[in-house]
Image (cartoon, rainbow, N blue to C red):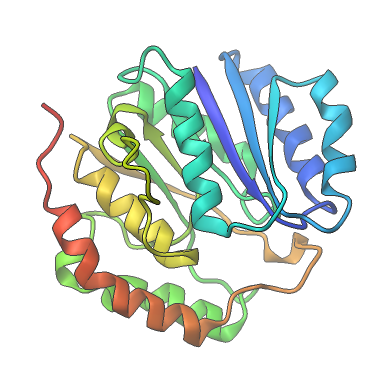
Length: 248
């Protein structure tokens, strides 16, 4: 089973199009899948946009009445995928954004790598002129900000948030401690999740993607300076997780 996990906050303008594109991708891919969406305290028409898709897609919408933030939404999604799976060594979760920056057409590349033996697959996009300058600079230097001991070999873009995980790599991260497993938010949460999953993985691969910031229907929520500081402070905490042993 492939679980498509989509955190969404006020993405009414694009989340429906993302779902439609995912449906078209899986019509061609011929794999069994489920879509999980967290509607994270949206105050726009996200709920109304999602409602008709329940009738035509294998879709579950998890409503959070008050906004919990990106990291908590990701954690809820991945925990739900783990709870549903009875084959965590085979099944996988694909994390993709609802703002249409990430194209669902790349999902088959992620799945092929998982089916070929990768445990974690990371989508990485080269910095482009479509990205705001500050945004582009932080993305370029994210690995450096995290520190040498926190880098995942072969991954130059640890914060994109477009990734696939064999579910077994997530089991020890989200074992139900009763408190949030991800200690950071935003891009730092993506880097933390990647480092911790990579610590449980035998093989990590990457997929070259294109980010379409011109398709976003809202201003960026990223403050580059805040994100840079978060990555810098997240580095020491991640080091211990990234050094955990591989799956036994």
